[in-house]
Image 1 (cartoon, one colour):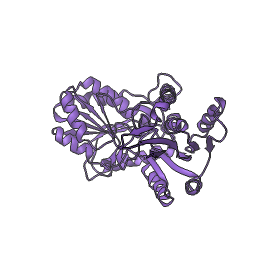
Image 2 (spheres, one colour; image 1 turned 30 degrees about the horizontal axis):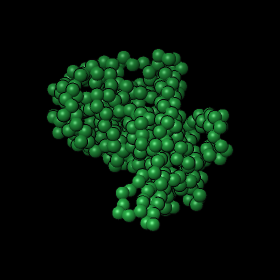
Image 3 (spheres, rainbow, N blue to C red; image 1 turned 120 degrees about the horizontal axis):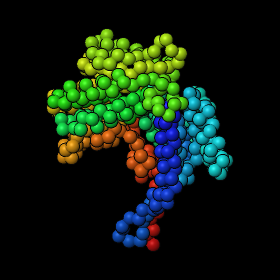
Image 4 (tube, helix red, strand yellow; image 1 turned 135 degrees about the horizontal axis):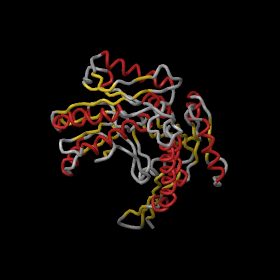
Length: 382
């Protein structure tokens, strides 16, 4: 990850811990219920031990959004980090120890998938939270269901980035570049599908493709670098296979890119496709890397149809200067999050999560602390 983006991630992590430190008391306060006689209240209590299974793409942020609210709620954590970042996992564990988190409250483990399944079935574990691929989510949900354990899943996404006819095109292009290619496109809520209204399509595509052609792969330790290598050679090879499949099926290449074969590592030059049709696999697949797909929409209804015609429902972005239009489109999008006039993002005090095959449950904001609580009714009829 480019160092400038890594620093941005750490800044967000700090905001998340501060948010729950400042607001947990209020968020966990009992709720009183108006009853005919006596009193009734709902107490919010921890459920116990939780297993977190976290990914590699935002290794500090993913842990923070799971751990911070659950620490404050009184739950204890077993954390299985991605095998790609063991050093980060150790740093996080050391950080909690350094600031005085009691022993046993946060437990960093290096476990296989088979060992994780065993942990899920342990009677002491009361809930599981996973951020990862659709396949990983299916496996964990199956194990958790068999063990009658609650699970929160934040899975893949194929977020739409809708550019309306009245959009500020320069702003839209800037947002599309950062939304699609930040972290080398390796984000669940990246702007993977750019859906542009016909009347501004040519203008947007010209500016967007010029910007992509001007991007250079560079040293991630350089503060000026925007796009570095992908996370692994295997990930880059898989993305190349998806790109090749789309081209072979008839997609048009607007900007040539792909795996850089003469350079060691997982360097992948950004690519842009159009003319992707419903018959192609990539129409409904998630492209987890620096490949953008641009669609031309006849009108707003067509744009919404394209946006919803995928199995995922994480987030979406709308570029328009018409507030009423933005509200109408947002209402019709089958997603968990909509951002207007900016690429999809995340904040400490706003909920994060999706619908359909993007998973279920929410993290962050006021909802992030509610997922793993025992809402205990106290009813006094005396």
